[in-house]
Amino acid sequence: MNKVTVLVKGSARVNKDNSWQANSTCTLIESKNLKIIVDPGCDRKALTQAFKKHNLVVKNIDWVFVTHRHLDHSSLIGIFPNAKVIDEESFQHGSHGAIHKNIIPDTDIKILQTPGHAPRHGSLLVKTKKGTIAIAGDVFYWTEKQKQTIDINQPDDFADGNFNDLKKSRQLLLSKADFIIPGHGKMFLVE
Image (cartoon, rainbow, N blue to C red; front, side):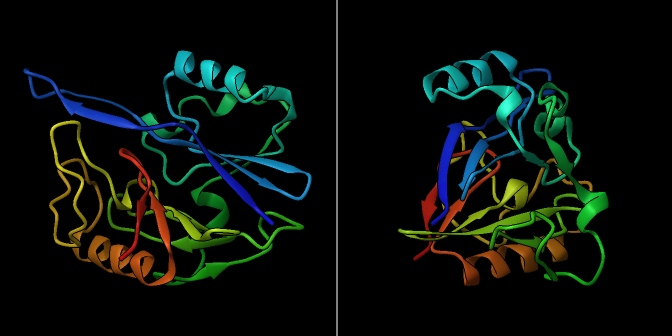
């Protein structure tokens, strides 16, 4: 059975000068004998500390999945010397909500196309003992000052995609998952 561990809880805030400071949630998926990192982020210190805490070694990571190419999610792709990278170029074939299987061989992990925050965005569905977990990237995220409430109509201040697509992606993940790991914020139960 797959195991999912949040290594770094993502954070995002708007500074006084209206600039953003953000680092994505970084998640480890263990599937059979494979180790998969989702959205390694941009905070090397936080990721290094998480690797030490969980007795992980960067050279032992098999795959890195990037939900989208915003730098707060993708900057540290290159620190995994032996990992194969799955990004938007790998999974962007088909329509909104299309499910891609077997991109990560020997697993039952599903990749869903979830555009909206970015035109090319993907999320993962991972079956675990406690239920199906969606690793959603920025389909869902909250800044440090926002209350983490589930609202498919919540505005996306940093999107470069399409808001109608984002609402469809939010609804899709809410319909398929028991738990969702957002791009910034803590994992939540879908009720």
